[in-house]
Image (cartoon, rainbow, N blue to C red; front, side):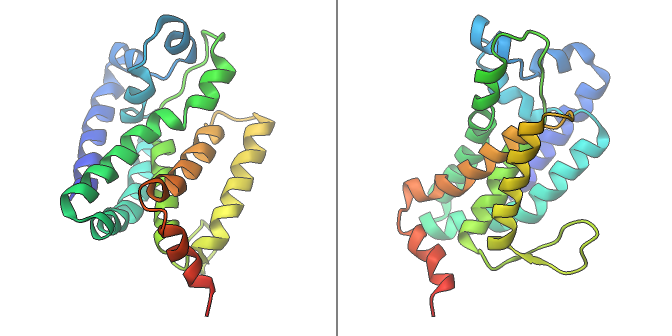
Length: 203
């Protein structure tokens, strides 16, 4: 239910911002403005806007597939209300945490902007891998599912490599750190989840 609310709110705000450029500009993650002018809200607001219909659709579709299960796992691990609060806290805080590396890197570049929920979506995806490392994940053009524990390191390696190359307009660094954060966040509140994760590999 919470995941559906997040998707609905994100879609509404993103769609409105498509036709209101001033609104879009005011919500972008701009490292220079955050660091030098203390526009801290931009660490979070950029997660509600997207650059295109395709960008919005892909992020929300991924969030729907992995978020609904992750939400249930949070509620099972901590009880309904607390689990729901922690799930929302992880998602919202991932906007900021996934952007910290780019904040440091681009803090003196006024022309750098970023937007989209990808960092938080990556956090949800990797939280789901923590809870169920054996789950199958489908990748485009590959007809068979890849186990989560195999997908995760490949995804991180890809994000790291693409961020290092810096040859496209995709926030690979945010994807990387959002993913790491999503895996670590539940463990901070339930260290025994490490044992739960490892138990899938021990007979």
